[in-house]
Amino acid sequence: MKGKPLPAHVPVLKLLRQAACALLAGAALMATAGAAPLAKSHCLSECKPRIGIVSAFGAEADILLEQTQKKRDWKINGNRFTTGELRGNQVVIVLSGVSVVNATMVTQLMMDHFHIERLLMSGIAGGVNPASHVGDVTVPESWAMPMEVYWNGDGSLPSPCGAAGDVSCLGVKLATDNGKPRPDFKFDTPNGPVSSGLFMRDNFVMNATNAPQGEFRFEFQADPEMLALARTLKPALAKCGPKNPSLCVSVQPELRVGGRGVSGGAFLANPGYRTYLFDKLQAQVVDMETGAFAQVAYANRVPFIAFRSLSDLAGGNDFKDVGAFFGSGLAETNEANVTLAFLEAWSRRRR
Image (cartoon, rainbow, N blue to C red; front, top):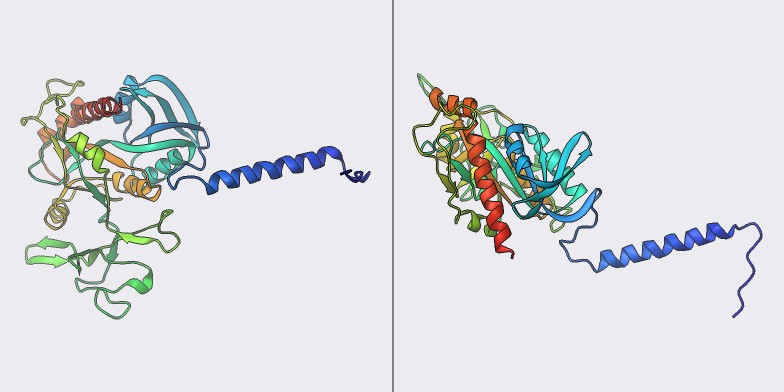
């Protein structure tokens, strides 16, 4: 069939461009419609599948970067992301900086710019469990952010929406244990405990499976497969760090897998609150990043695990052990040793 002649006022090149754009849009729509639920729809910088590794302190990331081969640096919004091969795994490593906000922004930035199949947090933290020691490496099964709170005027259950403990009309939800709100933190005073009115809240989170209504969650679970592998590790953990071998801890550090980790915006140096976290949550370790990192992982439906070496007992006064950390680099060295052992074992299991 003979086509009609093109009007003289319509440029041929313009029509060709429009047709090409329509074909590309149709192809993209078909690819999206047939994609698996977990498929990456985009990766702004590079699309090679990788393990994403996030650290908060420079000393933590430096040890891993020294071991990374075939490195390439990417500067994204002022952050340096380093891709390469580490113990047989394709990785991308980034320094988030301290704080919940920094960890959230940088982890999501990594997810947007790279094809991240699994996430790993590697760093130092404060101990909560009094049985733990400086230099131990803790790998919690779950992470919560109990410093996300409803701050009531007293120790009574808040009731702005009617019933005691009901805060739903405000768009928030109190954290519960066996259906009951978790108790508020109480200050120790010479006259006995005094209620702070600080009640833990659940976090609101959305992902592709629950949007737009979202859900409230108190904690985020580490990947069972990665945890199972971590339990098999037998890394050599040092008692003295490399920066000052004369500063050593008195107890041989251990790898401890399991329990709950907690994160918050406060740098915790309060023994009373540390005891509260251990008594009410059985928390093992506290930091300022991993809970947020875990929420980003959950929101993006990416499995995660976190390795945290203890720099001190949060709010404790064991200056000898604290000095061993700051003076010798003990904590970050042990944490890096466990992270590297895990990556090597992870690479072997995929062969």
